[in-house]
Length: 225
View 1 (spheres, rainbow, N blue to C red):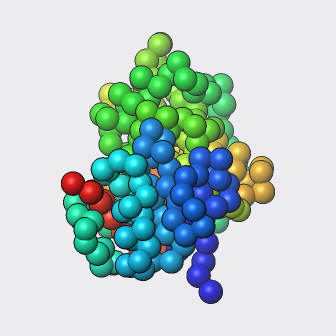
View 2 (cartoon, rainbow, N blue to C red):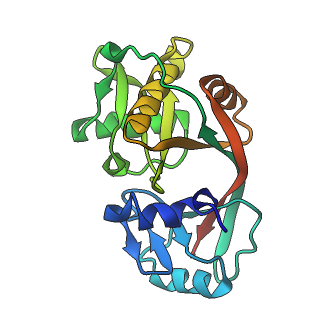
């Protein structure tokens, strides 16, 4: 039987992220303003064709797979980025919540600016709609943040973990990650995340916190043009 995390986008849009879901029983996707992710109930040429016909813009789109997938035409494969899916197996973490600030719509410009600088992964204008974003500020400047993304219940993904280059080494990422771990566990869910294969520094931090690699994952970047 397929594990929920083998197909995290479709299962998230069918459960915890259902309020953000577009599509039908076989094909699901987020609005472009929220995230570029698309998911199929069954990975098949027929469903890829139906997805091509139903999505209302040209992309780019991102399709997750735990093994390499042959993407049929007329899709164009723009990139395939290897990575890992990691699941948390540990206790709650100590957190200094006094340095953390909930992020709201007024912070979106700074959130987008920080992700464009640090490139933690796709971050669209309305990614904040996933919820639970927290940040660290130096004065009025956002210098670190982390939030939640996919929620294939009972799993909840920690995402957009990033720190401004001028503020690394201060433990901000660990504090933000620990906060998210505790929040997710308090809700009875299981934290997980995705990371690029070549992001050695982040992988090391995640392992010291208690995350273990569950699976390889491929981020298939697709376009219609």
